[in-house]
Length: 569
Image (cartoon, rainbow, N blue to C red; front, side, top):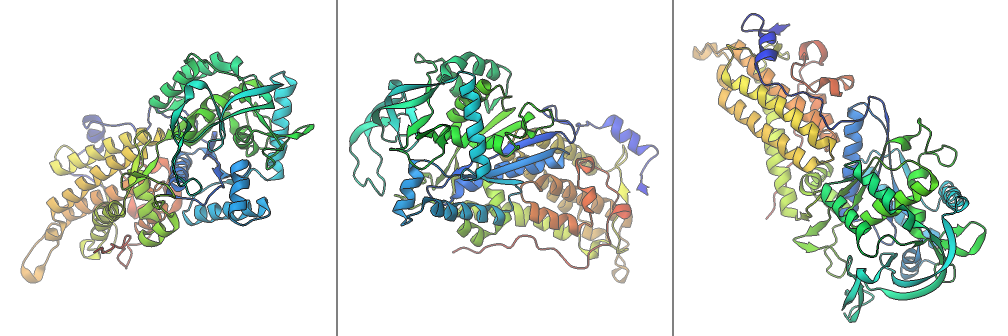
């Protein structure tokens, strides 16, 4: 039943209150449409750190959000296992077999993702036979169309970044201090990364990337292909500088880089690690058996989620390879910033690299997921401090969300031992109720717009602002004072009590649905506590007016403590 304070109250509510559509204007995918979401594949020259976890959590939340909206998502992650740096790392760590080293590091990434509840559908390794087949086939496609030729490369090469650089991209500077280079010395360095570069001259296979400048710019002109806008501007600047877009060396002599995929029909050359690595996105879609031009392929709508340090490779090299092969370009490249630790850059030499496994053990999975997605940013670097993680855990999760669900589901406030019936405020309702529902509808709409853009940071702030208002509403109404107490001759107000409890529970249910892509385990427990069946946790239920008496299981007997505070000295 729907409790009403006046005739036609629901009609009045819809016609007179400011209503925010739950369909974001930014949404462009159809229901059940196939969507590929990818992380970069992570380089195995070292174990995973907090930055790797953040990228994976961002992609995981995007995937969960799109599944919530009814999309057919293929979400992949994995490891990039070829190249000189990997071979070198294997030797430094005492491995005589480089593949065994790759196995050990890749398994650490996989274990972290499983522990972190990353909901990937596929985990790709570039040492797998299926991927080697992809690289070989893509090479043959590029070669058969005349885009590969053999030539001599002369220029600057950065082994740390595995990238060739123009004269304008290098400068004289001091080398970075590393465990293998403890003393900084004068050298030529990359302007972009600060890593040392060397002059090389060698015979390689070259890709005619210079032919694709205008077509990549045309792709960018379609809008939001590289997001946020600031990163698109960087790519445009790279494409239009005075050097223009040059042909790219896409192989290395086996004598210099033996650990990699051999060039088809030329065992003296190894495929350039970035052509190898980027091709993984095709591998997971079933390529070459599944053609990327097939409208039923997940490749039709591809979203790459990457860190800002690899934007050039994804936004210039990769589109050029795809254009040359005759394949569709990604729908979007979503780029994010990096993490510092106590305002300092993470580095092994500083000893401040954050181990995500230790962080999870100390704070719990969902508090860490929440902190990283709230603290990380698309354009501004996030800063990791244990103090701020604990502030998020205590202030946002335990005191704001956790406290509200604990208080509002107390049996002392549900006198019939049942959930309250549906209550729709009307023109004669309490102004507090009207304001709360208006705020809820605005919050739903604004959060969807932000989540559709991958902006979980600002979305979380919108949700928390509403939760603060929900707690204030609960404190202002004081439902505990509405409970009848005959022994004290207190009549109470059962009807008003039920109305307040219904509105509060709706605040919790709606925010739990929105926070589920970010902290899935805790929000699943919250919705279970409210008796919400799993089939009632879809985008269709992301609106005010849920009928608990009709759909929910009985009121729980036990209280729910979602987040345990950590006492720090």
